[in-house]
Image (cartoon, rainbow, N blue to C red; front, side):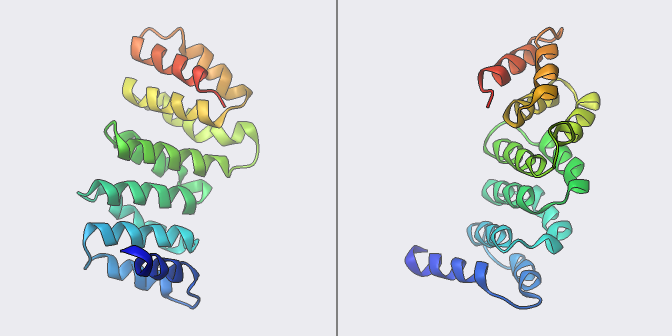
Length: 177
């Protein structure tokens, strides 16, 4: 904690050398939830995509701060082909802090994709099989990503038969970037 803790975390982010990120991952199993969340955040700062597969396990951690930090880190680290997995994780979360972190992670990951239409393709694909709650979350993400195709989808969902989907579409328009 304090200045010493911040300095330690900053040094982890800058530490060079082969195997550092893997060593951080090994350390996660033996530390408390607060330390675990901090170490997971350091992996995102280190830009360590090589640990994504192992990091995904922590999305199911019992501690919400660990889950939230995992989602945030995954959003920064995953590749385009892994975005559907992240969307699936987002759709499994319960409303609250972790779901917000998951939404932000999906938005960050999708925003890295070049091309306005391509950027929303993983969300559009996931929307086809999503239930009402899932569609509501996806609409929120589409609103944050923006673009003509996203706008068209959101506008279409204003007329959905389900009130929750309609409300989410309206909120997405209200929050439009």
